[in-house]
Image (cartoon, rainbow, N blue to C red; front, side, top):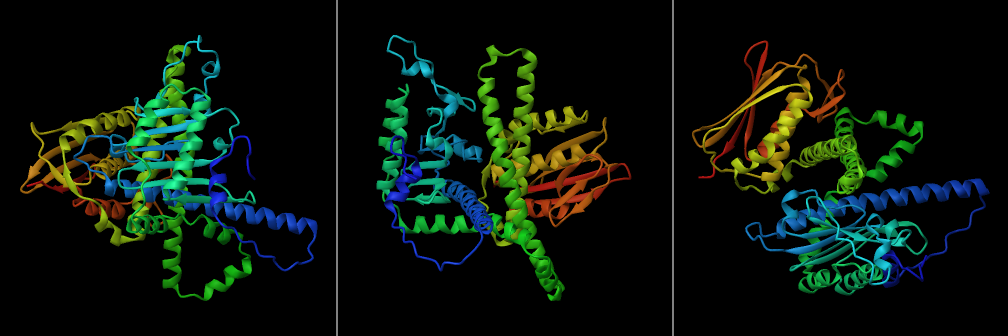
Length: 483
């Protein structure tokens, strides 16, 4: 429905599209049946729109990665979203000015006469993400959206509603739509006297919406389809009658196994999206509270920091599982992993402290031995960080309290050799589907060995496992040197 005082972003799309309504055959049904049908249609529409939104987020991130000039440290674009940041790849954050629209940033004093002192602009995530204010109860706050402006393309995406208030996913590369969306968002910033509006205006002028290349639009659409979590299919599958299930028993065992494996991958992809979204929101709100440290006692701050750390680790764990499911469901995608020169020294300098924190929390002793100078390797830095961290975490979580892990890094010919030597796990693991292993005593999930090996292979490397003795296990990762 049109919001005449404060329109939302869906209104812009609904005005620009030609909707054709067809009269359906009138069937006599009871009021209860009609309500049930409407509720079911609404639920499926919401699932469909949500899966398209998730697929679009993955698609736009891949699009940005393919268009970003990694060697250029200058600003390469602007990304505004709500209610949380959409980028999960840390390497993109350094190249784009990002911000989130949220009612949490609303400052009533900004609407007061000019004599009132203005608050300092709010920043999130180590001063990289701007926090942009919306008035409480603003209809835009009920939508999820993202606007991307770069030198090569512009895009706006909205998870909102159509003219019948049915959940719908909208997206457009059209400059006129993007410009109207931005003007709507800008009006909100102007309404609350946002302090940095002139600075943002300059950024928008630098990256004005441009007409898209049809090949780029095709690439985005293809990636969106490739990354759709099958939420609607899962909902239908769960609602089918029992007699339909019995009919499938006549299908061959091979076809059944293939279908089951595909469904498992889709389920994992859907679940990881569903888990990451609320966790990202919790982490964002937690970081907002941490910015007001002076308002809290040290114990409260410590607990907030723990929440932030736990959310971050779980988000990264879900991202790793999603990436593994993606590669396993379409093995040919492994060849599409971008491999480049990787400074392992810089990567480990950032990653080892996180390994040590994970080990300390479980009272595990971690000893890392590095050579005086580490050579560069050929891999994918962001994905390598995730997979190595997942490997160390899997070893850490499988050991009893007081266990030991030793990590040795050295060179072996034209490859780098990273050895992880640990005590054999006392807690047995059980297979949980095609990808995961489950530890009944601790409830921990981890990728199974076969999938982990496949991920290292996609990264240009190799993983080997050797039982050194009854008490020790050795995992060795080989990565090609950048010669």
